[in-house]
Length: 218
Image (tube, rainbow, N blue to C red):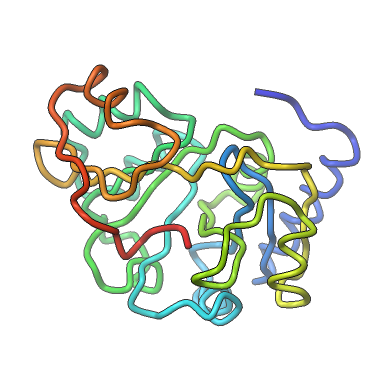
């Protein structure tokens, strides 16, 4: 994973300050540009929904910095989930797990589950660690529109609805694979950068094409 240059580090520090005061930050990831807010600030999370014109019954995915965050936010972590974490994180795979009581309801939309990912990109990891809290990991687009791959595409869609855009160049463009691991057998909810075959090779049987999840990044 690449390190941050001085200019990007300065933008990250600015982004941490924005997030702390309830602002929204768009940032590059190893998939597409994300739109972040502190999960602990209800008004900031509400702004994410409003800025994207996202339906309020669609839960928001969460980016975390490591296993300690996952253990805090998941009510339980079954063996299948641990296999996926060990095999594909950090990286372009999101797991849906039962939400712990500590997960704010304004993030889960009352669904009882939470979608978690450790990104394989230094910018969101630095934001999370500097903030001391997981951040929202939805794509930085208007709902139903293409996920942005560049900072200019974020500006074109969201404009001044975002308080800060961290320009990290062009993102790879393939969104994360979302896998439901609330049961014993992983179920692919959205096919993305990690293939079903890769999951099967690493962790055994998987249910494919279960259907689009309502916590998908868009």
